[in-house]
Image (cartoon, rainbow, N blue to C red; front, side):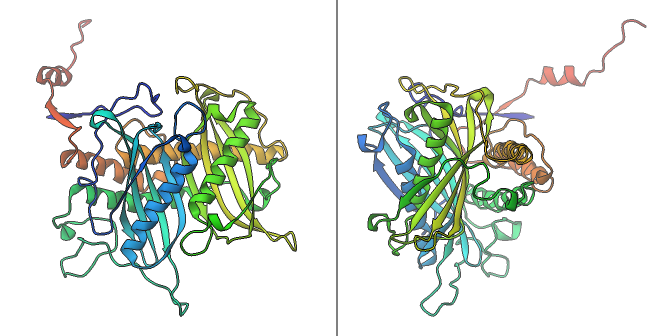
Length: 432
C-alpha cells in the first residue's frame, strides 16, 4: 500500500518568500495544433503600487488575448468572449520577470468552446512560479450570411467507430495516444461546466429585487475609444475586465478607507459577458461589496456593467463579475487584513442584504470546492447540495489520476507496515 506525497505552493504566498516550483512547460501541457504560447516581459509599466507587483489589469488583457488566439486558431473563425472564471492567483508576478501564457482548447460544444490557460512567471536561474490557471468560454461569430458557425471537434479523441467525439469525458473506447494531462484537462472542463451550472441554478437571489440601484452606491463611467477596439471592431473583452477590476478595487478602497495600492485582487469567481459594446458607447460600472471573509482579510466585490444610451438615458445590462480583494503590505507583499466591519449594501433593504451576504458566502465556498475537486490541491470540501452529482465522481477521478499521473512533483512511497498492523489490531479491554 502506498500514499502520495506532494509539496504544493501555498496560496497567496508573499512574492518575496514564495517557494519556486516547476509547473509543466508548454511542451508538457495539453498539446495540440490550437495551443498558443505567448510571453510578455514585466516592466514598470505593468506595475502600479510601487512594490514591483504586476497590476492585474494588464494581466487580464494578456489572458484574454492569448485565449482568444487559441479559440480562433481552433475554429478558424472570429470568436467572442462569453465568460471567464475560477481564477485564483497563487503568485504575484514581479517586475523583471517573464510571463509565459499557454492556452489550449479543452472542451468543444456546437458553437462554444472552453480554453484552458496556464500562466507562469519565469525568474533567475530557470525558476518558474505558477501564477494562475483560468478557463475562458468563447462563442463563434455568425458568418456573412447570418448563419451559425460550428466548432470543430477536439483533436485526438475518436470513438470506436472512428468518428469525432466533442465531449470532454474520456471513455475506454476513446483512448488514444493523448497525454494523460490532456485527458484530465478535458474531463475537468466537462465537470467544471456542470458545477458552475449547478451553482447558478442554486442561487437564492431574486433578480428583480436586486436591480441596478439596489445596494450599488458607487457609479463609474468609461467611454469606449478607438484604442479599446479588438480586431473585430468591438470593445476588447480584456479592456472591460480591466475596468471591472479597477471598479472593484475602487469600491474596496473607499469602503475600507485604504490606499488602492495596498489592495490586491486574489481571485475572480466569474465574469460573464451577456452582450458587447462598440466605440463611442458609454459603459457604467457599479461595484458593490457583498461580504467580508477571513476576519477582514478578504471581501467579495460584485461588479455590474451596463451600456447607457446617451440620447434616451436608458441602460441595457452587459455583464457581471465577482472579484475577491485582499489587503497587502506594500513593502513586503505579505497579506494584511484591510477591514473587519464595513457598511455594505447600505442602500438595499435588510432582507436583500441578508440574501446578498448568504449568496456571497456559498459562492466562495463553491469556488473553494471546485478548486479542490478540479485542481487536485486536496483539503476538505465544504458540502453544498449543488455538489451532490459531480462531487463524488470527481473525488474518485482525482484518486484514479494519482495512480496514473505524469506529475513529477508527486512521488509514491510505501507506508509503514507496522503502523498498518497496529491499526488493524483489536484493542484489548484491560479492565475485564
